[in-house]
Length: 283
Image (cartoon, rainbow, N blue to C red; front, side):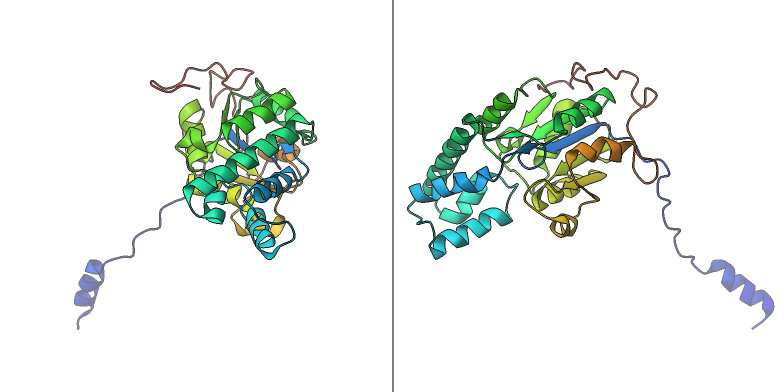
């Protein structure tokens, strides 16, 4: 084969496609979706106490093997919609609804009894994020009535732009991404899911954040699950507390940072609290 033929064959050989270039600019965080119990709210194990009350009403004896098995499942699925947990534990819908009602009533009584408090520094962290132009949304696996009782007990009704429970996002709670995505759609606070930060204390919080495409999915060590469980579920960072979240988002390096006036020229000190929503959406 002549040198000319070899050159012609080489010129016509297909070349491997060039790998796409990763974007060089990470958009700033403009929406923070934060869990409540165990993350921003310290409840001191009230979930397990309320479960005990619900289990007794359903005929599950404390100290029995059945009780231990069900309690282990409750612990493993912390962060999930409570009605979904009870559907798994009690099977048919009627039993699940009765168990969930008993749980919500027991938890509400504990809340009314002054058994909850903010995680130290949580309110200050929320306000710091809002002052930096980040819209903050609080989410929970509890029913709306329980979420409202917690907000009232803490005096947090007007603290954030929006609060969401599973029913507000179509009924599916964590580990589905629905509440995170509903926060984006309801507030219009981010141009991309990459501008969302999610923080929570359970593996289901981490799964929800990762499935929603959030660029920061931060686990906190003030609640149900430990460092290994949070990282195993996809946490991008693990913090001692949600109080550390503003610092995480403003630290230079591989973190995306907070918005500037150039990023979002219509920022208000309340973090978009008064910004108009897209047509057809309400807060």
